[in-house]
Each structure stands twice: as C-alpha cells, then as structure tokens.
Image (cartoon, rainbow, N blue to C red; front, side, top):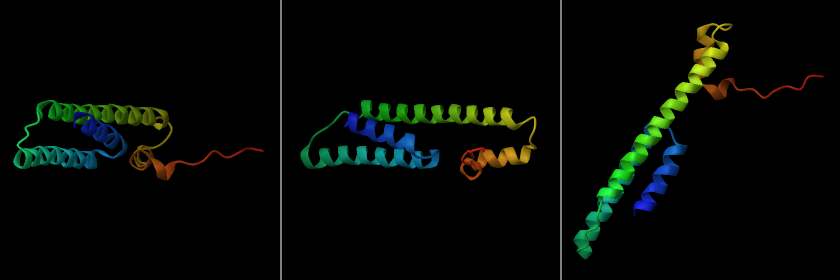
Length: 109
C-alpha cells in the first residue's frame, strides 16, 4: 500500500495544480483509511498505517515546497528579464497567463 500511494501522489501531485493536489491528497488519505477500516471490519486485519501516512505527508510537503520555489524562480527571472524595459502591467499579465503570451518564433528571411 505504501508503494501504491507513493506512486499515485508522486505522479498526481507533479501533474496538477496545488489546489487539486490538496484534493488528491485528501482523496488518497480517505482511500487509505477507508481500505484499512474495511480490512479490519471484514477480515479482522490490522495494517500499519503510520509509514503510509508519513510518506503521504512528506510527498505533499515536498511537492508543494518544490513547486513554490520553482514558481518563485520563474517569476523572478521573468521580472528581471522584462522589468527594466517593459511596464509592470504586461509583465504581471505574462506571469498570470504564460500560455496566452507564448508565441512561436518566426523565421526571418
């Protein structure tokens, strides 16, 4: 169960935004607790949950911390690149919607 939850959180948290990542974490947490409760009630099995729960929290904290620092670095580099020659409003718009301002390079003839 530890490996499965680790894989789900590692892949899922890296592909989705932070708000949905928190919901994914809560869903996986609910599934782990629900599965363990079902195993206990139906089969009388007690599985250790501490290692799974600690790994889940560490995956969430690591992913959120990594995303925060990478995003902050991107914002700083973009602001430094355009900050001296472009007014702050277009730079903020580029930071909020990077896909809207991305353009393919044009070939010069």
